[in-house]
Image: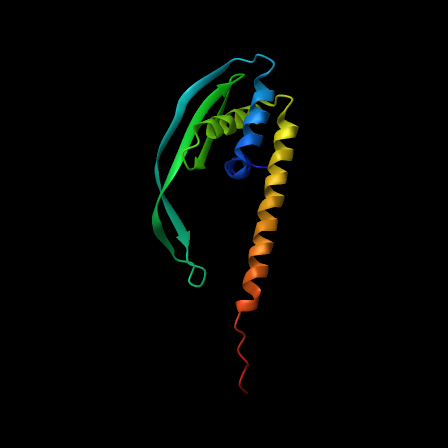
Length: 140
């Protein structure tokens, strides 16, 4: 899994699962250094219009980011909202994987669970929208 994909999935993970796994990663006493303390700010949300594939600015959203160093490797995270503890935990998990430490497999499993939940949400959303689809008959 690419780092970009992993960070995106960690940004969607539940707060409790991030913090619990980050606590497990730090339980062995490994030195952690906070490079950028969790900070809250606004980022511009950009989306792509599906028909013409043109990008446009949707608006500003609240986000929190953090950066840490663990075992000589940097970890970074950004999440929507203002949950400083969750974003710090996600940064620790990113650094854990970057360093190749033992909990990397557990972090990948967490990301896989998040991806499955995302897929299930999308399937459910489409199932709810399906009855509203208008299909036109072709005139010959």
